[in-house]
Every structure is written in structure tokens, then in C-alpha cells.
Length: 451
Ligand SMILES: Cc1ncc(COP(=O)(O)O)c(C=O)c1O
Image 1 (cartoon, helix red, strand yellow):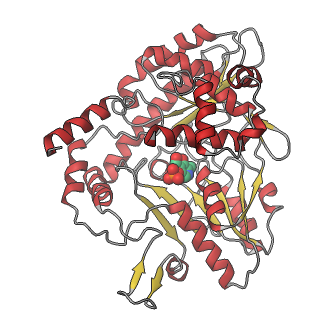
Image 2 (cartoon, rainbow, N blue to C red):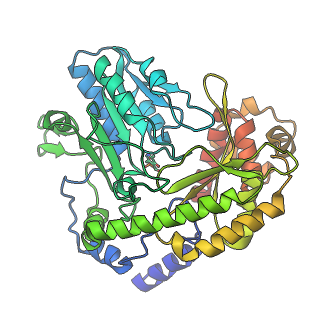
């Protein structure tokens, strides 16, 4: 292809994506609505090598650093990572990759918040790191950072605050607003040893840049990897990645410089207005409730089960929102280690551009609720039986690539548009064992790329 044809093909592929700009996609995308041209231009101006100031993969690196610090303090054997069940999946991935036992602490099913005493009860000499969220992705719950930190300090346990999604929003949130944090959640709290905040979320940068902060230089130095003991040049890496692109970092620097503290404040005030508007609208929609007391620019909605005839199922509702041009994320219900069940929800990530569409958004929320009110949550076992026929789901976990592909094809999940309605897919996720769901999801996404 010549360059023009390649760019045209990219534009064509891009046009098939979800509507990522303008506020209609209420997850994944953090659109400031400002200085858009600056991002690409700044990225293009960056040199090929990245200065070691901004960290990629902050959650993974936080866990690696804490594990190494724990070993340096004399920890031996297999370390444990203690975290609420709501901790972002990135920490499950970190525990899996870095060989830590993941000790998940159930959260309160009504608020989605972990109790400090429940976290503290798990602390011990084998704990390399405890993690809390500011706030959590699923329910926007701000974990009790100060109380957990006090207990962690008493027990000699390191504590990471995952402010990946919240950090750059909470820092600017208007004090006294209904969704403002109710206390300090950062290094103002003694006992917090590290904190992550994603520049590619509410720092409005392109994907791939985060910040990981450590308390103290010596802790921070454990992030680094250096070797001079091979036949090539001495290697000194600041992060898990060796070679990495400076483009997103340059764009992050540019957008933060353009916005300044005042700009971040204005954008955050806009989000606070949108959140208040949406919360008020939900209060007026029969059958749908806000989960807990969300902090910052996110909100999760669950069915109000008080009157089953009037409930609004969040997954059917999320699918119904598509008819109005809004893309809302469904989150499956899940069972915690103590047997309690977290509700099925719909998740809205609010960004500065939400305010541009908020009138249409709240109108759509009401109309979508009217369209599905009284309908039952889909029965995942029935969906599974319909799609998988007589196949025993437990036999699917260890399938090879071709067999897993065959199962997906037979179930009709590879047909164009098969995944447009997410409620049946989420019902399957709720009903099938995670190992089966995970195997099929990997095949679904991988086969889209290579078959
Ligand atoms: C609370 C929180 N932590 C961490 C992450 C990092 O996720 P990833 O591994 O996709 O970078 C996210 C991303 O959504 C998040 O919301």
C-alpha cells in the first residue's frame, strides 16, 4: 500500500468503531473535548526514545516493586496480595504474572465498599502488598483509605492506592459536592506507600501512560531493572517495558500543560454537574437505583428489586440505550468468596463531554427504562443450554484453539451482530464457570484477529 491508501484503510476501520468522541460512549474513553489536535501533534513531535519519567503499566509495576521490597525485608516463600473483590482486574493479572497469592476480601454488597477491619484481619508477615481503590471501577466506591492505611502501618504491610481511574478527577473534584471524596485518599494518609493514576484516563492522554508514585526514593529505585552482565550494552530500564514509545507521554505532557490546574478544575466541575444531573434523573426512574455512594465521575446502576413487576434490569436497559445512540457497559453479577452476591449493574463513565449530551442522555435513560421495565434478568443457564446444546460447559475450559472456535461458531457467536445485544452474553458470563468464559472470550477476540 502507498501511504495514502494505508491512511484511508485506517480511516475506514476507524469508522467501524464505537462512537468514541462526543460523549455517547460511556466507558473506556476519556474525552476532554479540548485541544484535540494537540494530542496527535505532540505525539508526532516526540523522539523515538522515552524519557524514564512516566511509567507504563503502573499496577503491574506497583506489585513488582512491593514484592521485591517485601523480599528485601526478609520475606520468603510465596507472598500474598490482599485486596477487595472490587479491585481492578489489573491486580489479578499482576498477581498471576508475578506469582503472588491473591487474597480477595468481600465488600459490602449494598455499598461496594470494603470494611477496613475485614482488610486488616488478613494482614500478616506473608503479605507483600495490600491494595485499595480510589475509587473502584465497578461501583465507584471509595475504599476507607485512612483506616486501612493505619492498620497496614501497624502490621508493617505496604499499601497501594489504585487511583488509576479516580486520581486526576478526585484531585480536582469540587469540595462539598455529593460525589466528592469524604476524606484524604493519597499520600496525605500516612501508611500509603504507593499510588497509581492513569494519565490516559482523566489526564486525557492517549492510551498507554500512567503514573506510579512511591513513598521514598529507595522504594522507587526497586522499580528499576539494570544489568551489565551480558555481552551487550548495559541495560537500565525504569519500567517493565524496555523499548517504548514516547508519543503518548509527549501527548500527556502537552494536554496537561495546555489545561493547567484551572483547565482540570473546569473539566472536573463539568463532570460533577453531569454526575449530579444523572443521579437526579435516576432518582426519578422507577425500578433503577444507584449502587452505594459513588465518588467521582462514575456511577453503577442496579435493578430496584422492591417491586419485581416494576424492576428495570440493568443489562436489558443497557442494550435498550443503544436505540438512543448511547453505549453503556453492562457488568455481570458475581459471587464473593463468602457467598454473598454483588448485583448485576450497568456502568456509566462520565467525562467532560458528557455535559454536551446530558439532556439527551437523561431522556434516553428514562425511555430505555420504560422499554424494559418489569422484564426479568436473563437466565444464563437457559441461554447456555440454548447456545451450547448438549455440550457440558465444564469440558470447555481446556479446549484447543480449533475446538474452542468450533464451539463459538456452533453457538452462533461469530455471526455479524451476534454480540450487539450484551444481555445474553453477560447472562452466559454469570452462568458459566469463569475458566470456561475466559477460554471462550480469548478465542472470540483472538480469532477475530487471526482467522
Ligand atoms: C480502578 C482502575 N485501576 C486500574 C486500571 C488499569 O487497567 P489496565 O490494566 O487496563 O491498564 C483501570 C482501568 O480501567 C481502573 O479503572
